[in-house]
Amino acid sequence: MLLDKFASMARTRAELEAAGLRPFGAVTESLISATEAIVEGRPVILAGTNNYLGLSYDPRCIAAAQEAAARWGTGTTGSRMANGTFAEHLALEAELAELYGVPQAMVFTTGFAATQGLCATLAGPGDVILLDADSHASIYSGAQLSGAEVIRFKHSDPADLEKRLRRLGARTADTLIVVEGIYSMLGDTAPLAEIAALKREYGGWLMVDEAHSLGVLGEQGRGAAAAAGVADAVDFFVGTFSKSLGAIGGFCASPHAALEAVRFSTRAYIFTASASPSVIASARAALAIMRTEPELQRRLWTNAEQLHAGLRELGLAVGPQPGPVVAVTLDDRETALAAWQRLLEAGVYVNLVVPPASPTGASLLRCSVSAAHSEAQLERIIAAFDACVVPCATAP
Amino acid sequence: MPDYQICVDYILSVLEPRNRGTRPLGEDTDLVADIGLSSLQVMELIEKLEDHFDISIPLNILPDITTVGDLAARLRNLDG
Image 1 (tube, rainbow over the protein chains, first blue to last red):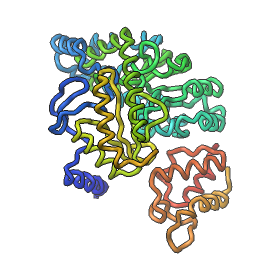
Image 2 (image 1 turned 90 degrees about the horizontal axis):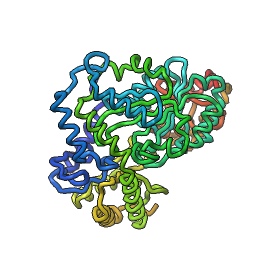
Image 3 (image 1 turned 30 degrees about the vertical axis):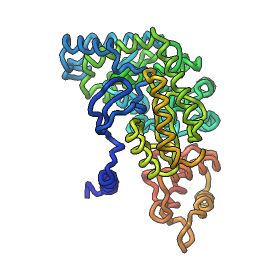
Image 4 (image 1 turned 45 degrees about the horizontal axis):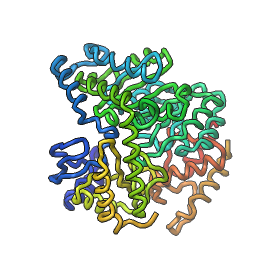
């Protein structure tokens, strides 16, 4: 029967409901600031929102969105290919192209559409997509849709990537290498200098998804490739407005003039309505702030170091380096569920990640840090982990 | 590309520690139904095969693979 395959998921959902747990889809009932909200009836510090620069609640971004809504209306009601290309969309594309120092950029309605759509379109039957094993679901989904041969390499392992490039031989000319700047679940940064060197040596086309590194790394927040000094090796910069820019949408910037032809070949771009002008306007305002206020990125990293050091000193299993994502690994799913709930009750919202969404098979209490977090808020987050997680966590 | 029987033998050597049944593993062993491999464990098996035979195995072939024999047959036909 068609729906039988969902029975297991339905049972899991029912068990969580019966236990009074809602870790997946917890309801934010009201927002107090970029870092505080009422979630599931409780006032909490938001430590799992990817709002890295805290710009979702910046008055300048809100004003830009309000003005655009008043001027352009609430939605475009059409595709970019039809009536949905407004001056706001073109202005943002020009600003993104300028940010990356390339001639063209294109804007998508969501980040998922950008990565899925481009992977599905850039490569086709007879081509190869060589992707990092820990790639985002949108990349896997696009690769699957592409009809290309899909080969994965071990996560952030240049030696393994090199083996696969060597095996491909002349086929590297038809190979799209896909990596992320910062990986979303564990917050680790890709070894882009080594990856770019391999691309130069063996050939291939390099796509870097800067979803979690835009605004977080590099001068003016350009991202991980710029921070590694290898932006000139990147063929396709992709990313999202839904993290550092506090809005929603996706983009691709490329030095290749063919991007304009790709634009008119990408289903995820053509067969969907374009982003609302208010969303684009707030993304533009946030982009300008990101580029001109480097203190936001500095504060983000100061905060990341405070949270990483605090959780590590508690003996929790965090990653080796601080970063905007600080994930605590717990071996057992039930332990993670219970710890997530206790954290919420103690006034801290984090993300719960369980297999198969987690990259290692373990469960994660995933924190994301914001420039808008105060030192006192970070201390409260650390104290909550001490009270709620340390008693049930095993030593790293 | 590796010979079919060599592939079967190597796959069985990797999987044998996971054999919790009374029957020996063979070409007809179902990777999920008989051994209970999770998707993560399937990928670990694929990585071992890739390293051992110095090949890259496309993810595209996985939906068509049920048994040890299916996997070995597909490895034999890979380009490189």
